[in-house]
Length: 477
Ligand SMILES: NC(=O)C1=CN([C@@H]2O[C@H](COP(=O)(O)OP(=O)(O)OC[C@H]3O[C@@H](n4cnc5c(N)ncnc54)[C@H](OP(=O)(O)O)[C@@H]3O)[C@@H](O)[C@H]2O)C=CC1
Ligand SMILES: O=C(CO)[C@H](O)[C@H](O)COP(=O)(O)O
Image (cartoon, protein in one colour):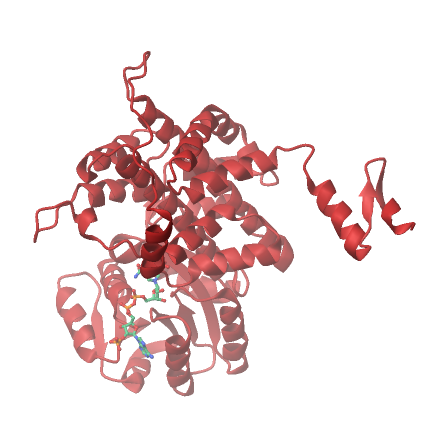
């Protein structure tokens, strides 16, 4: 009899089922289309564990030993609720449903309460790594009751990616904590991908490089602090050719980005929490604008198309002989990456405080070191930095202060040249702006406060009397 059930044999469910079987687990499979389950059973027939295709909900439930643990890998929202609704009447007290989809964390909290009221347990977990990760080791971020986690963690830790032997799979807090962390993982993923797209744009439109040459640059970045899964696959995507036309594949992909919601949710939640997340916001807005193909075409006709020609002559760096522009671009990406991670972890810190989750930032960085889409060589250093002092902002940890200090000039140059040439680099610009704003000792918020008091008598603090709220002289008339 199976101890684990898996509902939703789509892109992720298929691969995760094979992964569990490879790790010796017996898994019951359920999908609306039984052929999908049968195909996985055939694909996994040589693996150590057993996969069982079930025709309907009752065969699925009755074929599992109690207490049952059911993993759901179906689209979040309505489809997940439909799955829960169909299984609930068939389950016994204490059975567990774990949602591994990209669910909104407040929905997860609602589901935890609804399932508990029905005598069931519910866990919300984020899983990252795409289909490849699901098959060979994803990163898993769980939330919900620690007792429920204790019941299911064995198979999940077996299936998870390993970093130096340690499973990238952990429980982080109650209720929606796991899904909040996965949402923020995706927010950072959006910022990372937008920076990569901007670097590609600078090389393509600013410097006139072709896609395979750009791929070579991305590949060269794998030698330094930018070593990451996304940079690795950016090199692969840029170097690939279209089998139909033999042109670079990238040149044949329509520049209209899709999105399913986790990036947007990250920005909205960061705004609610008052935590700066300007790089994620830039990334979401860039996708939004990219979607308006017709609007962009009409504006280009009215105002002229951006960017306005090539804008940087690549000279050789006298000392290193390397292209100076490329060196600055790599620097810009390193500095911006420190800012993106800093913002991401600060959003998590705020959420932890606001929701009383006691999130362990070092442990979050640890589960992101392997298996997930944002895995990068920097994450091990990030976990060390928070291990050393979790109260400190990431950019204030010595390793990251140095990285930012040593690379910010490249960011300034790249942003200035891009803006001057009409080439959009919103995430890189947001990084620079965040860095500058964060170190401004005498900001212009005194003007904001003066205006608020002038029109709305909102009062302000004086520089010589902190904590005391007063009105300005404009109210004395
Ligand atoms: N793809 C990815 O890279 C990642 C996806 N995720 C998340 O994992 C979850 C699954 O994603 P993915 O595998 O890509 O999605 P797919 O669309 O490939 O698969 C979804 C599965 O859910 C089933 N399903 C859909 N609606 C219902 C319903 N109303 N009742 C029962 N089953 C239903 C589908 O069954 P059928 O069509 O046969 O009826 C299908 O097998 C999502 O929440 C996604 O956000 C998380 C990380 C990465
Ligand atoms: O969770 C994921 C990766 O971590 C999924 O691939 C998700 O679909 C990515 O988000 P979007 O589709 O909005 O780009």
